[in-house]
Amino acid sequence: MIDALGNPQSLLVLGGSSDIATATARRLVQARTRRVVLAGRPSTRLDAAAQLLRGAGADLVEVVPFDAEVTDTHGAVVDQAFAGGDIDVVLLAFGVLGEQAAQERDPSLAVRTAMVNYVGAVSVGLHVGARLRSQGHGVLVVLSSVAGERARRTNFVYGSTKAGLDAFSQGLGDALQGSGARVLVVRPGFVRTKMTAGRKEAPMTTTAEAVAVAITEGIRSGRHTVWVPARLQQVMALMRHLPRGLFRRLAR
Image (cartoon, rainbow, N blue to C red):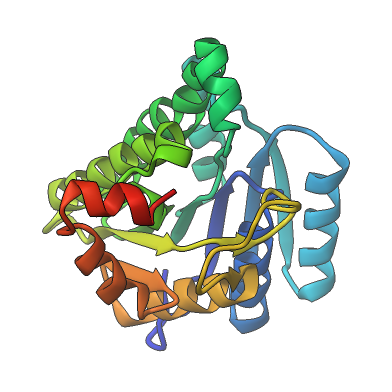
């Protein structure tokens, strides 16, 4: 259970080797989280993340194979994670960026981005939501993106998947209202990680550690949405209402 100070005792990470997931899990473990389940594709990065969390003080770190695209396995993965006891926080941290130009040349690449970022998230998110409702407590933290606020010409496939994910997550949060469980939507801007290495940074670029801080504070405060950095909320409120012609020129 989450204690009186807002610190969770257990954590399930879906996308366990991502930089943001690792930074968030480390912060939670350094506070009071004792059990961590890392679900992701088997890799040296996933193993390294598990070892880092053990070194940070976690009593138990479990590694579970998980593939966002293989949706018929999601129920079993969630069941396995919850078999060890209640889960206080579930962090949905998987996703792919993709290359817009390549996706336009080969629509199958766009379909894969949609399968991972949206379809996979809907599938596992519903399984997690049912579990949290059943246990009567817990937080599902969903990594969305400001890219979903208004799709840009240069990344509209990725942006559209995040727009769908954001809408789904808000709806799931409303469906869980009154159950004791809730959803926290996280909307970072450009984050400096391995996934974005080599890409041109955007204004107000942030770091995985800054996102982790925002997530942990959002869990403790009971919020339903956090922006990273926070001032992006005002920026995107303006961008959403710009005339389309002006937005096209600014959002290249």
